[in-house]
Image (cartoon, rainbow, N blue to C red; front, side, top):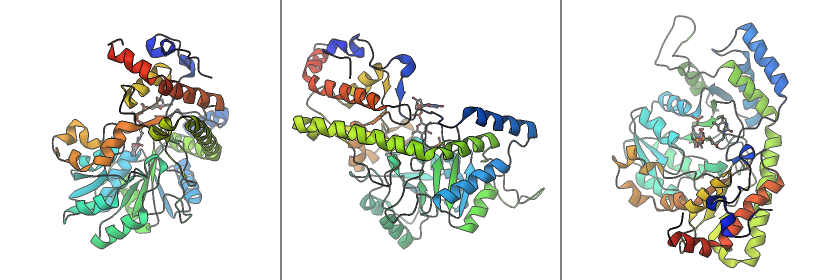
Length: 413
Ligand code: T4K
């Protein structure tokens, strides 16, 4: 239960936080469930053998395990997903304009810009928050070099329509699957198997982690060979460089962490699913008593093939000053580090706004979503009781929104 009776009990107004500092809850908190002593022993072995990187046995093992898990022909481990996107663009000989959603982490667009390409921002579907195919069609020009749709929050893109459109114009598709490891498409195939390739992030904040890292997966064997060469400076064996390359390699310790992480991935998936259901029950229960809440505050629906790594809610009250940003700030003071993923849309960041000031006008769903959505903590750090505390805080703020509104209007902080 939350510890609030009046609004003065909110940590923002001097009350004691719902979670103590050492027990702070974050979106994307890393928590290893595997045997840490065993992991450390294996790290020591890597150090003793001196085989630290350049495609060692742990990277090879990790790649095999990813292929097996995702039922895909090739997995190429990389140092992170941002570099993976860059290498994929280069391997597919992409130039010109790249279509990306604006509603994603900045890395999706930056990867293309870093490669000297022109980014074109596409709006999203209001149900799935993934690329809107109508908006996509309007953005295609003779200069379009590639499409990078994003499976944001593990919600899956409309791959059938995207790939139909891409095929019509002969444009490669690279899925940014940073959020979607373990997710399953409607046709029962795993994310990792569609488009020209798919790119995963194994950053510390992800449910499948190698601390830093990522992977490119593809069923195209020729593309896989090219990618593998490119992440190793373009080397084809000793002393032979046939093409341009970079250093995108994953090192052995990262791969080892990935192997351990994969061994407990299903447990984390279950915990995430359990947390999601618990959030959902509590949201729906309160909605039965308060139809206003039901209209303005909702947990985004999930789907069976999701990895439930992101629990996302909409807070859309526009008549009181207790808006989404207030709620995030108040939760943060309670040591519940809810996040505004993603705010603002990438098009609104200074770097892009200056070159494409008109983008805002075409991105209505994106703009609305960046103002309303909140990511809530989940993962192994959250017990059922913790989920209840977060829900109680949200319900408390909702019930007391007019009292808080008055206090804000009177200018009290
Ligand atoms: N495409 C998409 C759609 C992405 O979301 C991302 C990355 C990428 C591409 C690029 O992938 P990588 O190149 O990174 O492989 C975080 C992550 O840094 C970023 O990887 C991730 N997406 C993004 C959604 O979130 P921040 O700046 O919001 O993270 P930060 O440092 O605020 O951490 C969030 C919370 O996670 C912290 O409150 C505590 C917890 N945490 C964080 C770190 C770094 C841990 O528990 N352990 C840790 O080591 O970007």
